[in-house]
Length: 155
Image (cartoon, rainbow, N blue to C red; front, top):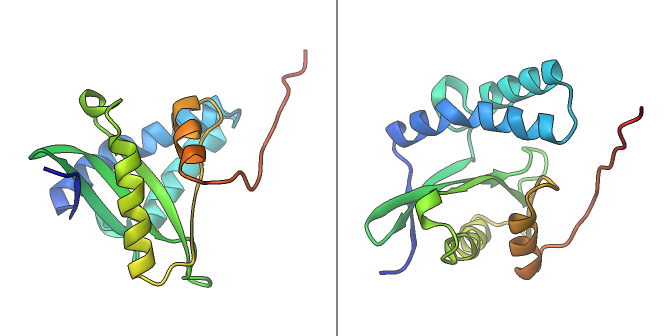
């Protein structure tokens, strides 16, 4: 049975939101954002993008189905209301037990198809530099680096 994207239920989204802001905060801190700013940014992002616990208009949240197993979640949508033709992968989560089997690749191909059906001309994403596996996956799918943020800790 091929991998499929199914619309996420309210319960799927609620479960996702429990850990999502914290995970984002941790990644921001790992990227060098001060803890207080990372906490505020993460909280504000999810309050804006999931008002009342539901995805913002135009955003789509899918449950990743693999062989009848809930294998993760995909959140995509227009990058901004001003330019709805530019779509963004806001988050992709593959269950740990399902990693290393090509699921991320299959989900990204499905995400591209969804974006195209909604009039997208491109699909972008952010990947933290410390996530080498994801960087390699996206590059192998033809995604190109469009910006890079660098820092150096000073003594």
